Each structure stands twice: as structure tokens, then as C-alpha cells.
Image 1 (tube, rainbow, N blue to C red):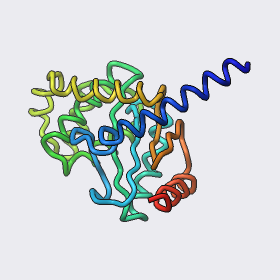
Image 2: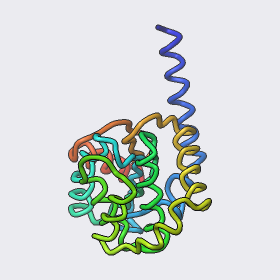
Image 3: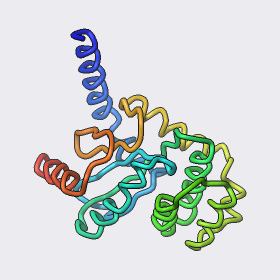
Image 4: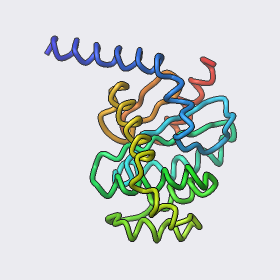
Length: 195
């Protein structure tokens, strides 16, 4: 037990160190979708999977937060770890971010609010519903560039000790699992105070 406890503490310390070292990549990767205030004084980063039921429960909290706090910058890190279909959804979303940034949040929200599986046809229907260019998605969904974007997220998650979704980064804290709006706001306030 003592060994496991020390090992866990060592992993947490390493993740914290890596968070400091990788701050630019965590906060400012131009390939990571951003919502809220692009110049906000606090950035929240969320690692998520479109088929993760806990991630789906966070989206209403995120939307409420962005409506209530106009000084939060919210970064989405696609981390499709649950199935090939969640990878397809993440790939489609990254194509939307790359070419039609203004459509990303609507597309992301639609995918997150959906129930059931995500076939390629269904993903494209959701994209069409929010006005995204489905021909562009079909053309680029399997491109090497999109693969490289996802690989960077996988590598980053691994170096930060993120083993599942959702995982939030707020200030200097890595918070695994789902949290409620009050806890999220409290962590944002704490990050603001630390500057």
C-alpha cells in the first residue's frame, strides 16, 4: 500500500511538472478548438470523447458557464478513446474547426447531446444540420493532418497522466472526472486569484 501511494504521488508530481513544461501546448495549440472569450483571463481545457456518458453530462455545464462568465476561454481537446466511431466524430469535428471555426461549438454540442451510436452517416447528418461543409468533412476526415492533430492530443494526455475522459485542466490543476458548475466556478476563481 505504501509503495502504491508513493507511486501515485510520483505520477501526480510528474503530471504537474509536465503541465508546467507543456503549458503552451496545453493552452495555445492552434489546432485545439476554442470557445468562450479567446482572450479570457482563465483557460479551462477539457479532454473528452464524444461517446463518453460523463462528457455528455458536462456539456450543459460548459454552456451555462460560458453564458455566465464572459471572461473564460474554453479549449476542447479531442481524445477519442472509446471506439472507432468516437474517433470518426473527433476527426469530423477537427475538420470543422480547421475550416469553419464558427460552426465548431454548435457541431460539438450536437454530437455531445446526441444519444446512441455515431455512424459516419449520422455524424455527417449532424454536421449538415449545423451548416458545416459535409463534402469537406468527407474529403479530410481521414487525412494525415487530422491524424497528427489527434496523435498530439493522445501524447499530451499521456504526458499529463490523463487516463480517461472527461479530464479538465484549470489553472495548475488537473481534475479527472465530472464536476458540477459550482465546483468548476470555484476552481476558475482560484485560478484567477493565482493569476
